[in-house]
Length: 256
Image (cartoon, rainbow, N blue to C red; front, side, top):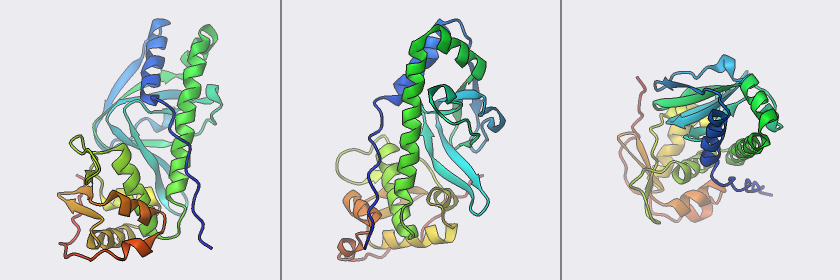
């Protein structure tokens, strides 16, 4: 019997807007917000995340968790407006997580004591924190839904589908091919699907062979979104009817 994962809950409305509103509320209460810029691949203050709330105001970053067996596992990608770190006031569990910049990023940092004082003075802040916590839980649900299968190809298909829907290139629109707007190496994708770089490379070759995705200059383009969706659900019977095409070897982007 084949098990199909349940769909994750719909993403809460405008989490990015909620983050900006929260920062404005804090500033209106007279609290200064420290902002810092990070270079690509730079770790973002891991040691402070258990006591401070961080808001990614621009750029894209990895949300990572270290595991004894698999090393660093990417729980997802963060974009402008996403929050991480201490959300204990919204019912979150205080757990440090490694966040690493994928592109150039700017992060606003709100110390825990500042959050506590602001919640006591303005209950609306607690409401904003609850919305951010809901967005965080949705990210975890989406991650679990993407890695339900034992097959790397199915997990990779789900991840590429997620990236094409949440991180499309700006000029990608309509129902046609969609270019993923972030540059990811096979090692990055392996961390996102909890697999090896070699397995990801083999799965990518197979999907390119069937015309589902294409890779040029390190940019992954989803050529057939519906076929990719079917592959992410394990429906290989439908994709197998596609006539394979000749492709050049997959090009792996090496980070500096």
